[in-house]
Image (cartoon, rainbow, N blue to C red; front, side):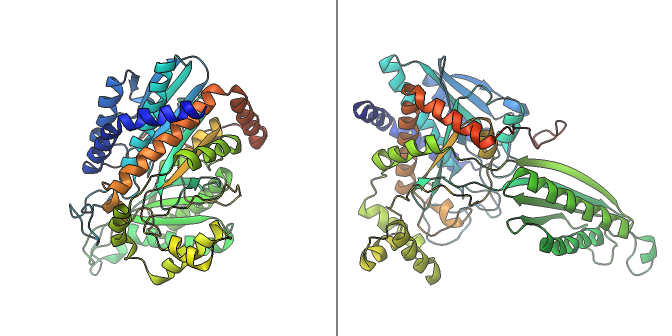
Length: 477
């Protein structure tokens, strides 16, 4: 087995430059949500050359795909993402915040790396299967709109993952480890109020303010926060405030709400209560309310059987082998952290390994890029939201974190966008490809592991089945 995995690593290394070039191309053409036409093209170019069959346009999304190699069971799914974030454009490699394109998009969550690391894993295991006549099926799923819109949730609703036995994914992070906790389920909803314009001084009695309705709704939600579960999260943004003229009763206003909770049914309940508040605000202001369902995704279920195997592969093959020069490069981002965060990183290093001396904990916690591997501890904690959650309800799923982002810096930050084309980032995506490919090898060659993972999945669901939270008449947009 060790010899086989070493060969898989060699095969990925042989095509290292190809994956890095693709990651940089995607970084240079940051696109958001479902409009990822340029970002998906490097995948098509490589996968066609590598002999995968490609089906495009899944689940009413123009730039989604599934690339397939092999045949028969087991079917191993690998999840790729390539969308960016709005208003996070950043000059590469710069140690301060500066937009490359003012107001433009940027890869501040590392999805240019995430997608190509998944691609490296798929190609690496494919090459090994080809060399050794190994049976089974590899499917690389190209999934738009993870950041907002949740392409995988639409794909799950369409049954795209129904024949997958297990799914593997990864994410760039500031630590190394396995995602062994859950995520928050989320509903994304538009609340649009329509009023009547009027002169705010000469004839205010003829006006009906949509902006008043939106503000009343937000006030009502603030009071609601006291009466939802502690773990619930409700946040919003104004998409329309009715115009710039203060002497006009504003005839339109639109809010975009994110409603989160540890379980999908809890998020649904909070969504219903928020909606009732919106309806009340419309009644109070005599305005009209239109509710637009944007998207939703489930909470993530980590599969312990596969995650345990992935942890071993992370420890054995997930080392990014960073150099002194890599750490010196990332120092520019570490230096932007507040002192409290730096102190937290030292404490975190000690928590990861309680046997460390204070000096060693300080050294590891002060590294610009983390070299530690987190212990594998499963818990009911939650963090963020991801449409990988929908996949994890359909089949056993595992994800790995590779520490190729500056330690202590958060996702969705300018530091992550600036780091996106660096040697540190490149080494991270290659390491991720190796962990994914070697874990896929374990699954392909060990039927007992897949059966164990599936049995655990059934036990965790305890009779529940996946039913998409997105209404059938809602399409990706």
